[in-house]
Amino acid sequence: MNPEDYNFLSEIAWFALCFRLKAEQAGRVPRFLGPVFHGAFGHALAEVGRIMPDAAPLLQLCYPERSSADHRPQSGAVCRPFLFSVKRNAGGQVAPDQTVEATFVCQPILATQSAYLPGLQFAVQCMAQRGLGPDQVPFSVERITFHPQPIFVPAYPDIDVQPLLYTGKEWLEHSAPPPESCEVVLETPTQLVSKDCVLRTMDGPIFFRRLWQRMAAWGNLELGSQIKPPFFDSIRVEADETQWWMVERWSSRQEKRIDVSGLVGKVVFSGLDVLAWRLLILGEHLHVGKNTTCALGKYRIV
Image 1: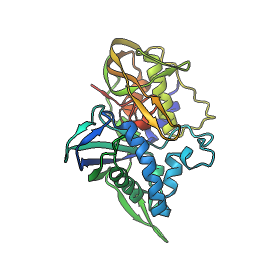
Image 2: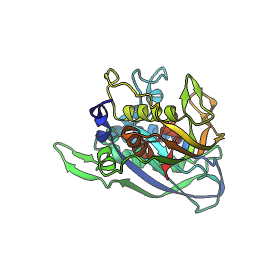
Image 3: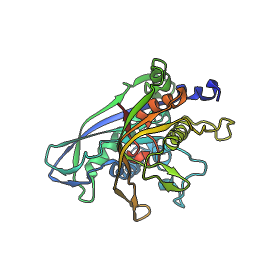
C-alpha cells in the first residue's frame, strides 16, 4: 500500500490522567484492577453528572449504553474514547496506606469542554471514595496528574481548558527503521479475535491486523474510507512464550460475569515493514485487541 495511506497515524492524539490511590483500610481487591476501574469509573461519572451538570456529557461519551434509555450502545460507535492502563497484579490483599497506580488514557474529545478535565478528576475521587472491588475497599486519592501538562486558553464567554496532547507524529518521526525481529511482552491479558474466536496462541498477521483496526478506530478513520486493512502476511512469529491468563469481570449492567482472559508473556515477531513497526510503536500507548478500556492488550516493546 502507498505510504500516504497511513499518514493518519501521525495525527492520532491522546492525553493521559495518571493517578495514585491509597488504601484507607485493609481489604482485598481483585488482583487485576483494570475491569474494576472500568466499572467503578462509569458509576462515578454518573455521580459527577449530577453534581457538575456541565460535565454530564462525559458519561454519554464514555459509556453510551449506561446513559441511553434502552441500554444499547449508540449505533456507529466503533471505539470508546478512553482506556485504563494498570499492572496485571496491582491489586490483591491491600494494607492500610498501600498505594495503587493507574493511568486513564483519553481521546482529545474528553477535554473539549471547560468542565471535562475537572469532571474527570472528580470522577477519580468519587471512584476511590465509593470503594473498589466486591468488598468496596475505600481509597483516597494521593495524586492526580495530567500528561502532558495541560494549558489553559482563555475563550469568550467561558474559560476553555485544553490539554497538551501526545501525537503519533512525535512518537514516529524519530523512530528507527524496522528491526529484523522484535520482542514484545504482553503485560495484561490480550484478546485477539479471528472468525469470532479468541486466539489461544499468537498469530502474527492477526496481531498486526488488530493493531491496524485499533489505531484506525482511535484516529476516527472514516469507516467508508477506501483504505483497507492490510493482511500483514509477511509477519512471522519466531518465538511464542505466551500463556493463557484467566480473569473475569462482573458487569452490573448485564448482571453476569464476563470472561476477559487473554494471552500474556513474550513473543518475537519478524518480517515487520514500516507500517507494522509504526503500529507497534503507537500500540504501546493505546493497547491492542478487545476490552482495552478494561486495561487489556497492554504490551511493551523490549
